[in-house]
Every structure is written in structure tokens, then in C-alpha cells.
Length: 256
Image 1 (tube, rainbow, N blue to C red):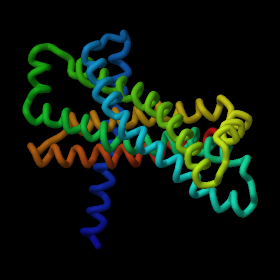
Image 2 (cartoon, rainbow, N blue to C red):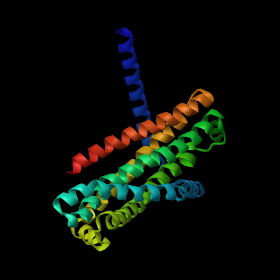
Image 3 (tube, rainbow, N blue to C red):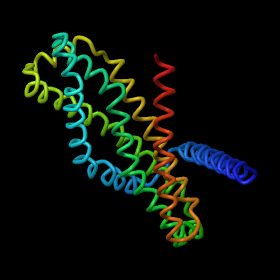
């Protein structure tokens, strides 16, 4: 019993330490933006790496998500004949919940993990210390461009994913339910407002910030060589996923 209590206490203290460290890093990033000085080439490089290279997997995932939602709606449509509600129901779910959440989780697994691995490798090979020895601030040079790139990229990827998911809804509705794509479009336009779109974009921006800061924190605080790099990547992905789910619940609750 004593060992179990000690293990729970140690896990709680570790979680509190990591949460505090992430908050401190977020404050340092915010302070580094006043005045907003950063390496433009590093920002562009990260935008290309995190955004452009993520387009294929985002579009493929979003297309199948839209088709899957139509399959889920099909029994309801066949039972009640509510063909005009397919566009509204799927569009509402995609724009407000499924799009930001699904793409955020996928983004954390691909981009967040890669970012944590890069920074962790630089930390264990003393490259971060080398930057400091050259009087280069690692926060301004490495972290700020990555945080901004992730925030911008996830918002753009969510926009693209939403559009592709709605396209998937139209194609699947035509193929499975014989509902014309214009019926889906008119149902979507008549019932979905700008507030629903902005709600999803706000979530994407917050999720991108959470993924960026957590992955950078675990990359910078790694210990233990190559084994530590693997642990840092795992911790970054888990932390980002938990943060996304918690923030999604919090934002949905506060805006409902």
C-alpha cells in the first residue's frame, strides 16, 4: 500500500512539474514576442515542413472522415427520411468538433512528435548549449518560430480538412444515399453560420499552441541520451493528446 501511494504521489508531482514547466515556457515564448524578433528563414522552413508536407495525410484523413459521418447518418436518414438535415448535421459536427479535434490529434502525432525528437536530439548532443555559448537565445531562434509555425499551420490545415471533409460528405451522400451534392450544400449554407466556423478555428489555434509548447518543452528538458529522446517523444505526444481533449471540453463547455 505504501509503495502504491508513493507511486501515485511521484506521478502527481511529475505531472505538476511538467505542467509548470510548460506554463513557464509558454510565458518565455510570449515574452520573446515583445518585441517580435525571430528568424524568418527558420519560420518559413518550419511552415514548409509542418504544413506543406502534412497536406496529403490531412486531405486523405478528412475525406474518409466525411464519408464515415455519412455512413453514421445513413440509418437515421433511411428511418426518418431527413435527407435535408444531412448537410447541416455533418457540417456542424465537422466545423465545430470533428475537424479541429481529429486534425489536432493527427498533427500532434506527426508534427509534435517530430518537433520533440528534433529538439531532444539537439539537447542531448549539446547543440542547445552551443547556441547559448554563441550568445544566441534558443527561445527566439528555435522555439518561437516553431510555435508560430504550428499555430499557423494547424489553423490552415483545419480549414483544408474541413473543406475536404465536406467534399467527402457530398460524394458519400451521392453514392450511398442518392442525395444530390447541392442538397448538402444548401442545407449547410442555410443552417451553419460564421460563428460555427470561427469556433472551430479558435479551437485549432489553441490546439496548435498546446502541441507546440508541450513538444518544445519535452524536447528541451530531455535527459538520458538516445533512450531519453524516445521518452521525450512519447511524453510530448501523450501530453498534447490529453491537452487537446481537455481544451476541447473546456472550450465547448464555455461557449455552449
